[in-house]
Image (cartoon, rainbow, N blue to C red; front, side, top):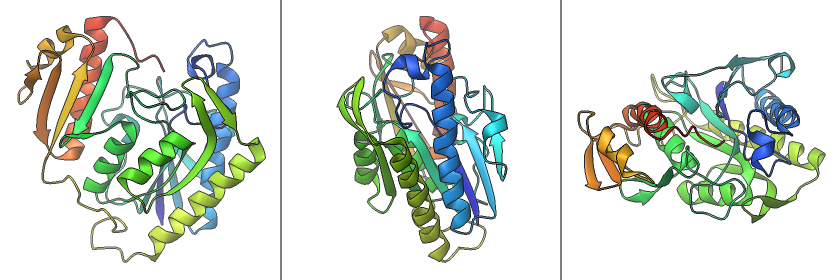
Length: 287
């Protein structure tokens, strides 16, 4: 069993504010410790369920957040940026399961630190006209690569968002949103136990599925491989006007661009979108 973990930070146990998750934030160093231990809980659960190889991708902001010397010794860590596939770097059809640790809900929802990739710059996103954020985009892309997402941890809004995309995914809520920067927290030990148990259950379910030749563990394998339409509404019309210089990208309106292709291709292209947006606006992702 080969297990892939994509680790974000906003949905980590105990973290509620930008100061917890931003480089140079006053509580960022403690946030890194909390993120590392949430990931380690997921690694332990995956190994307990029979994983023979676990790859962890540091998927937040600079992608240099996890404490490398404290990550579980049996996990391989992918660290640093830029990465061509960002939050899903090095994921391919040779994996059997994807675990999403520390994820958050999409822009416009009342979840802890909710946003879609670029803070306030991205107002909304759609896949085939269905509202989407980081959770749905990762789910669709992993499915197109032939690997099912089987587990997610984050706040209750993130867990609900994943359940709406795929009710078979095991979720572990580690906090309950009171507002965008406030939450009722589960006790740390209880939250980590929930992550570990959810990871073990998700990996066990993936192991029980018949593995198709040359692909992942079944489930949603192949979804989005034939082509989907991604649309992104930016706060700035200047971003949209620059992006239409990319072949295949068209305007839906003055601030919204769209492009059609296989989900993995769209996922990689979206990384280019963000780099263009950062250059045009001078605004890097807030988290």
